[in-house]
Image (cartoon, rainbow, N blue to C red; front, side, top):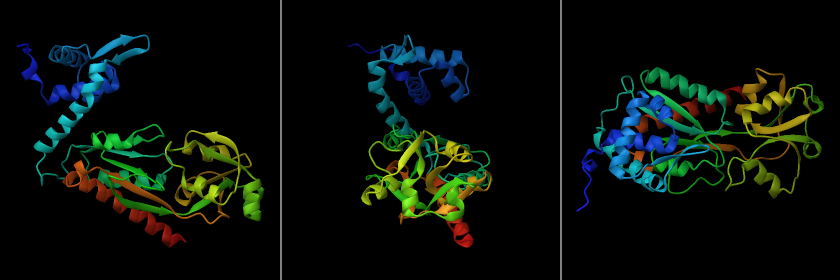
Length: 315
């Protein structure tokens, strides 16, 4: 029988090191994330190599890359860690005021800054010793896999058709408006469907490679084309590019209002009957009954309701 001496030494600590090393592809970055020394992580990596009989990471011209065996083992290691975490977490043991848990939320950069600010404020007030990581989502990010494997706890998005197989609840409902330079000719005259179609527009890169966004879907259904003169990767860049140009940006009222208050911008009613933009929070069955996750979902829901209520009062 070919039984390695080290096989029985594989514990949750080594599993965490393995997952992070394969993901980060850097011993130094893993050491920073785990708040340990590089020699300690290097020693753990040597032990993992003995256990699996594989180098796990090998050096290439562009840096370290995982071996085929390491990639094959990664999903199993993450599943095992998730099971261990569920075993050791007591059903009713979560106390926000004393918790040192880390919560990971995935969110697009076009969500209202006022919403995220309210979330962080509530989080710090209720759980002063816990940690919050806000992960920026993009079109190539597999958020369903990240939720299933425990890399993220909650994902926020505005899918026209929310992904199946996940739990979800609505957080925000927002109207769509147009944001322009305060000295834009349309800022004083108002905007019609014709002037909207004739105008020059700044647009973000597609958020999802599998779904067309709400705005693009409605324009396509109405056979309205617009001249997309400037395309940017980040939503938060757009307001600064509007200040001295004739560009038009179609976005949500929460987002527009935040930047109109700090920059010389004007908010115009959209001349097209766009439906409300709905933002959801999405989570996996693995976290559905966890008290800690119920708490963070409640924080998000409360903050969404607060933003919606404040907007209703200002109409």
